[in-house]
Length: 68
Image 1: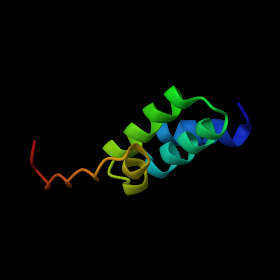
Image 2: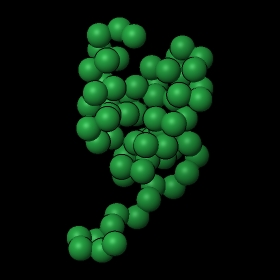
Image 3: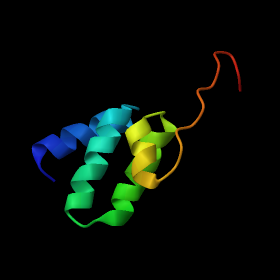
Image 4: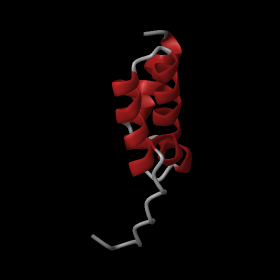
């Protein structure tokens, strides 16, 4: 994996939704759709609209502070 992809992966693992989405795009271009889908799901779950759009899903509703 190229250096920049490694950097994105570390940021994604730390909860950075934009990095997850960018890494998913990278894997999509490589034809690794399963990895891409997983990363788009993570980006979407973190509230990143573009990740949800890539999955064809609406963005999740934000969780109010203190809600479980």
